Length: 104
Image (cartoon, rainbow, N blue to C red; front, side, top):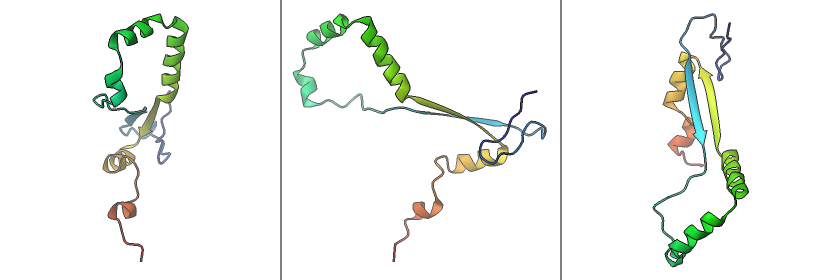
């Protein structure tokens, strides 16, 4: 039998018969594909394509491996109570910091 516990509170969900919720999150470097820089306008597109075609296969594999290392995936099992808490505050931010109280 597969054993499930809540990754937040540690509650055993195997024998309780309660629903189990799976949360999957992915983190990766972001970029703006619509951002055009001055140096982008100076580039010769045909030269860039030629350079890409000339790169050897090993370099392409190495580049993919580097990107895969920077991309992270996470998976969590949550009980119904912790799932509701997660939906209300997915990043777990403190309520006090959200209210922006003065520091007097």
